[in-house]
Length: 205
Image 1 (tube, rainbow, N blue to C red):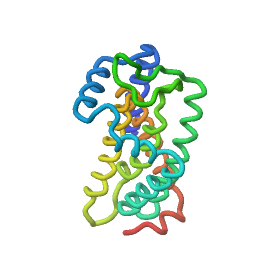
Image 2: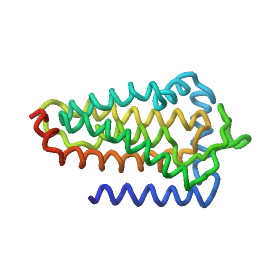
Image 3: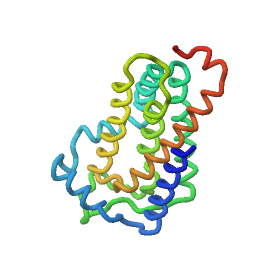
Image 4: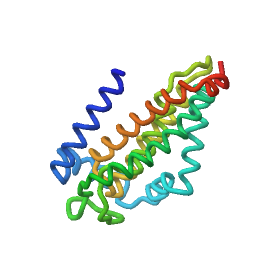
């Protein structure tokens, strides 16, 4: 519960600041420009990674996250990633119905694919934070090494967030709030799945 409270407060504070500012928060422009200087302002890999949160490739991302979750906690971990994806889709529609926050715009930073939709939440951030967060946050009950699965999950979230920022799709603060919200959804999904006896019966020991 303490972890959920910290994540919730962070997402609320950063999200509220972004909504109030309707523009970049301190550090956002510098982070984007630095990434664009190092990686280019429209790297092909970033476009490809963006598609991995959209249908049909989202199925691949959820599948990978479910495998990581299963490795760590069996049926509970695998199912949590799938449920977290569904929760992220619902949260995305609900938040977008009541929020509008401006996306990055030129000439502050380069924007690879301009969009008039809200920059908060980031659909990508919600989905990656939720599905890979399910593997990142789940309690392992296996004697096998845990760090590879957690490293892959954390790496996916970090690289995916960088992809959206480098393309000028979202400010770093918008990604941070969205990913954190996704992590909250992941925690909820884990708790719900852990409460189901049928999933616990199939959990690896």
